[in-house]
Structures are given as C-alpha cells and as structure tokens.
Image (cartoon, rainbow, N blue to C red):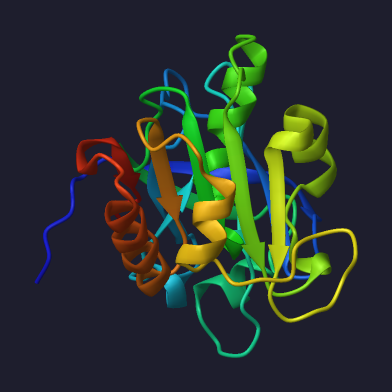
Length: 228
C-alpha cells in the first residue's frame, strides 16, 4: 500500500465556473502560510465519506501571492470518477489538499508544448512571467481536438500574441493550424533547438514529442516534462 505524507488542509470552495464546455475553474480558500511555485501541484481529495480514499493530482493555476487558490480541471462525465464528482460541487463544499510537490518548473526561455488539459501546469508559469514582465519570446504550441476545447484562449492570446500557436486535430478551421504535432509540424514551428522545451499532456503524447525533439537535435537536459 502506498504511503502518503500526513499533511492535510481542509479548504472551502469559494466559487466555480466553467471556462470551456468541460473545464471548470475552482477558487478555494487558502490555508495560512501555504506556498507553492508556478507549475507545482497537490493531491486533492473531495471531503465526502464516499470519496475520502480517492486522491488525484492537480496543478495550481493561481499565483502564490493571491489570497485564494485556483485549480482549472477538466471534468470527465463519461464515468463516475473524481472529476465527475468535482463537477457536481459548488461554493461551500469542502476539499482536502495534501503536500505540494514539484511537477514542471520554469528553467528558462523556451517553447511550451501542450495537449488539451495538459496546458494547466503552464497557466501559472505564464501568469507569473507576465507579472514579472519576463514573457519575452516564450512560446506555447497547443493542440486540441476542437476550437471549443482551447482552455483560456483569450488570456493566452493577450499574453503571448503571435507566440500562442494552436493546432486543431478534429475540426477544420481557417483561424488555426489543422495538423497533428508530428515531426514535420514541430520542425516547421521550432527553429532554435538550443532552448528549453516544456511538454505536458497524455503520457503517449509526452513520449512522442520528447522523441521527436531529441531526433531533431534538442538537448535532452533541456526537455522538461510533467512528473506526476
């Protein structure tokens, strides 16, 4: 049986809001002296008897200086799992947060590559970079099935401008690319292979993108992946 650390914080949901058709933002009360870095995550438990043994990792999308916590979570309604139950919660309901742990962290300017809800660790990183006026030439290449799946589209467009690159795989659209993130596509979009690369998405996607970048000539020590 897996051993977990003992740290627990019971927090209240302050507000919930859908940011896409199946992605929900949760604003939570913040425990005293609770600290994390952009890109980090914590295990969340729904504070209800039937769900107390179900822990799942989610990334903070708020900044550490905010007076509340924020998580941006994709809700899967096709089975009775944790996110399905989270989707039913409202202001006043309680969650249990556990230890903060390292996932993706910012090491330097580069290209961020995300698939679907895999963009969530990048949200706080980009928000922090914007606050610190250090966005510079960081880029985000974001793959989604349809345009309605693009999480925080308006915010990313405002922050990154032309450095926010979208490709849509299951819908034809003139506004964005309509291609899979294969070697040919990434070789067209990435010219500097000495930069950092940050990858987050489904496991198969992460491995595929990593192999493509290495084949193109990226430095393996500059490829940063999610480590849940």
